[in-house]
Image (cartoon, helix red, strand yellow):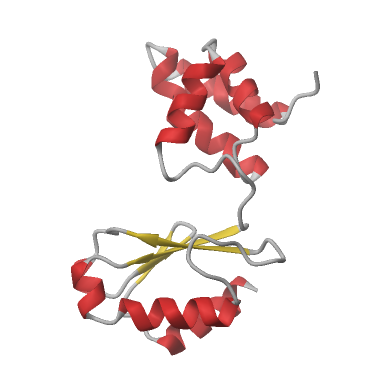
Length: 157
């Protein structure tokens, strides 16, 4: 069966495995490495992770489907999460989210038809002092306005 992950990523997973006394401890960073390469955790990618760590596929799948940061279906290359918790809501996250979705032509939880952007609602991004906040891939953006969203989308294109 063909591998879903490159030799480089499998090597990185092996390196991660060597950092821990138990292979289960390397599972989260290994899943991140696999998702970073494939874009989501395909069945083949999860099998490769299981093989590389010497774990049953069921254990890898259980962890991958438990955490919201992992995707088991194809999603947008860029992931934008908008906080809608109380501080962000009171400071305008709803108009920011509406503007973002209107600009992209999608609703929260959807990916743009070109596969470029996934928009999700986040319960809390731990940045109440910068509300409203969103996370674009790994970068946090605070004190958002619709104009700031337009600028961010311009950079993602």
